[in-house]
Length: 169
Image (cartoon, rainbow, N blue to C red):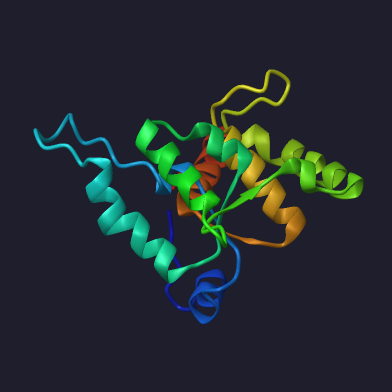
């Protein structure tokens, strides 16, 4: 993968210039990494929340996730934490709901999903869980014109596309 360092990423610049805008994240930003294969010590949720999640929510007060991402959250602690954030007044997390889309937005979202899913492990015909959150999030935010804080989605889609087309780095 080639990285262009000659100019700033406009999305990152936008996030830092206006941290109060809605920023959509993916599930893996909320789930502690599992390094049990490499270490005896576990990165438990309370520590992960303290050093990673809370600073993000403090810095960026309008964090959002798509409802499909919420469904992907594993672990009781993560789910309870997100539910608690959603119940605060005002809520500290926004849940993007497909039911909030107009008919036209829903049609557009479906069209975008059709273009995205072939580069992922998600198949809308069987509605499997693999990459569902990524596809649903990207489609929703494209329709709504929102930002997403998820480099892994972009890297995964680029890698999948390159592999599918037989391209080399």
